[in-house]
Amino acid sequence: MKILIVSDTHGRHQALDRALEEAGKIDMFIHLGDVEGGEDYLEAVVECEKHIIRGNNDFFTELPREEEFEIGPYHAFITHGHYYYVSMGMETIIEEGRSRGADLVMFGHTHRPFFLQKDGMTILNPGSLSFPRQEGRRGSYMIMEVNGDGKLSFEQKYL
Ligand SMILES: [Mn+2]
Image (tube, rainbow, N blue to C red; front, side, top):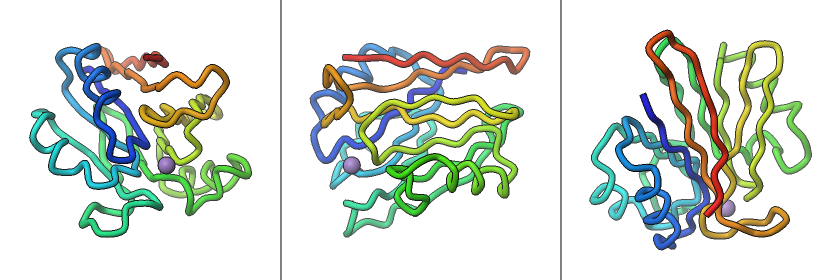
């Protein structure tokens, strides 16, 4: 199972189109917020199962604030991250993920890729496709795969 994880497209679709093209056939699409009006576009271009949540810049939207669902044998918790002060550090979001029994915690908001595996939990941020802030400032996304044995692999990608 191949999953494309993106965030913070802020209404710009050029980088998103590239990520979708590079990723090829995917089984699940996850957008971690700050879609900014891109919902209809995503609805039109992404055909597989989608999980899209609201960011701090998504004002007029019916997107959910956050979501919990299963990916294979894993419990995923996805949130934009600003409710858990992710710009200040990971303590609060890790605690929240723990209290929800999450194996996978995914967030955006900082526009910087992040990856940490701690006490059996994976905490990740794919960075921003449209407005990257990390050094080098290349739009970024993540590919996650779950193989038949339920093994996870993660690949941070840069445009
Ligand atoms: Mn943002």
